[in-house]
Image (cartoon, rainbow, N blue to C red; front, top):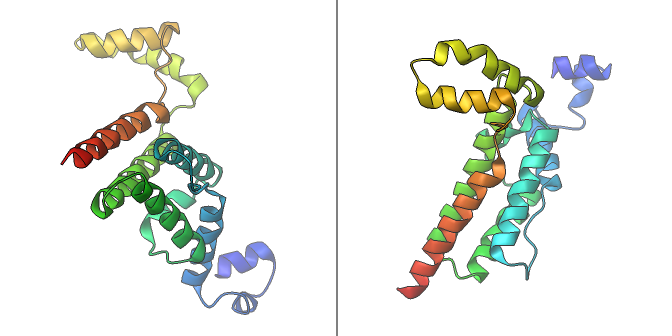
Length: 186
């Protein structure tokens, strides 16, 4: 709170007129971030809604790189979070997911998005540096033919080698669709 007060050029105690404590401040920050994420809308096909939700969350977390770990580590029962989760579970339930499968589905999607976003944020190279980095490491990859083959393609530009959130997201959505179809058949 002292560091925040210094950054805002106010007295630390004056912050307590607005927030009860540090946790209250962090909860408010998470609330603001969650409010930016697109929640599923009624009537949208569940796969489209979950895809848009995931891509929206990823975009918001990229804009606020500090928020991913904070979002993952806090119990958040704010109105924005409760609406976000309720809209998500509601979309899945209306599509025919059981309570258990809806719960596991949205948690799996969130784990993927948060994990992908953290990985992307911590990746040691910027996209424009990746080909050069791959070329740099080619000599040490001689004993590893598949890594060398992939790195050669990244280095020569025939394959970008960059992470793609859409690839894993589609795998998850297709897997969830199969689970939904199986549960309907039972």
